[in-house]
Structure formats: structure tokens, C-alpha cells
Image (cartoon, rainbow, N blue to C red):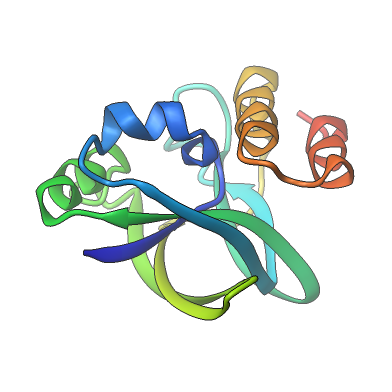
Length: 145
């Protein structure tokens, strides 16, 4: 099993049970020194896509999943790795149990552009369902779209 840190729609454990049915939710945590942003507007169907970039004094809420080998290929297909939309990157996640190495999907595109209201709402709903703090969820809901 490998550890995957979800920061956008995949924060929703119900959604992940469909995308990676053999991969349970382990815990939640924070990517410290990173921020959630959007980019690759020309790659998405309805606006810019979620990604993360390094940013001191920022943090991104994540859900950690134990990704079974059976689910890795389907996750890569779902995230568009073969289409060069996203790539995997290794990060360190701060959890209540300490620091955990994990991988995330990072957009292969420049930062900039606005997400659709539907997509941003989906991310905020997923963060809320994963137990993100209220102020984090409200910040997502107030972002421009």
C-alpha cells in the first residue's frame, strides 16, 4: 500500500470508495508550506483545476488514503496522469501521529484562472465531509469563481 494525500474532491470518502474501492481512508492532516490554488484552465471542462503550490506559512487540509496496488492505475487514469494533466509528487503530511510521507497529484499547468462555482462547491463539500475545520471550509466557499 502507498499513502495518497487528497486535497480537492477526493477528500470525500464516499467518492473515493467508487474511485478506489480497495483503498481505505487512514486519517486526515495538513500539508504545511503549501496552498491550494487553481490552474490549467484550458485543460478542464469548466474552468481551472485544483492543484497545490509551495507557499510558506500556508497549509492545505488533506485526507490520507492507503491506496492498494489494485487501485493505483485507476486513480492515475481518473486524475489524467496518462493525458499529462496531473503528475504524482511526494510530500510530507503532518498528522496527529506525526509526519507521514505521501504522494499527491499536482497539475502540469501554470497557476491562474478561476474554477467553476460547481467545482469549488464540490471541493468545499468534500473538505467539510472529511472533517476540515469550519474556517477552512468557509474560506473555500468564499473564493472567487
